Length: 194
Image (cartoon, rainbow, N blue to C red; front, side, top):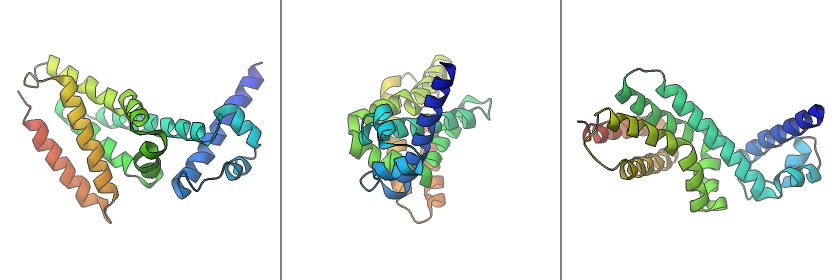
């Protein structure tokens, strides 16, 4: 029984890995399930068994991208003991990760288009936005912020970060745009400082 579970886990991991490459390089619309299954050295039946259809496979790929970015946000934020710097490092990590070639098409372009804005937002709320809310809540409880609605602030800042990522992703050279974005976010956050 344990061997079957390990084989299933490996099959699913392999399909997600191959599908992510296809969705990144070709986009959702131009990625064929036959090609993904062939590249993963599996049958289409295995793909349908585990994911139901192409959209189901894409959903799992997007979830893995969202989780990977959330982990990166946590890792980068943990590089400081200062809560303000943690917040800024987390914001930078999110935007930087979102615009990386291996993430931006799946996360920013096809994600909302394929799954719909509501499904995309729910995933974001469970990952990066959840971390942002936790950091803001902790900072407000410790007296770092003026009394404002943490819900409103979380949605406002998350929206700004997502829109900034979309803008940065369209730039030829994303480094100046990232630095400009972080300058604006720093000024914005300082406005809430107690």
